[in-house]
Image (cartoon, rainbow, N blue to C red; front, side):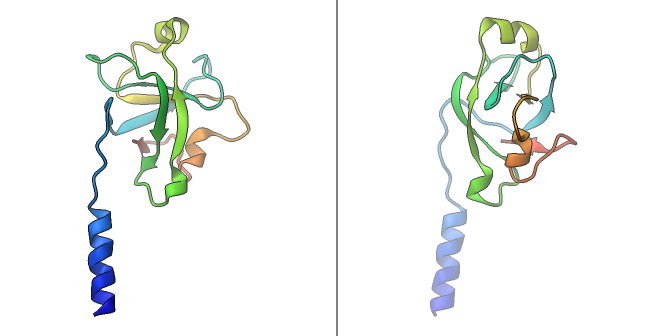
Length: 117
């Protein structure tokens, strides 16, 4: 009965939903050399109808298999970056600066078609 109880608790935990304010979505990842983004910064615009995200956000690769695969980064949408990247939507733009690529810190992700959330 202990194993059945543990399996029931596991199933319950796996079905939890976290309400998100400000939007969420599955996005393809891209990296642009002339994006103007620094380490720990990303550009995210979910759709053409929405403004780019701004401030701290949580990002991860889909599927996320370990809590350590999530990272808190800063979504940047100042005037200079928005003028460069504002036409992009449905993608997350990663920086190319830094010691380690940000997609690699998200569960070993890369930019060959991986989706990020």
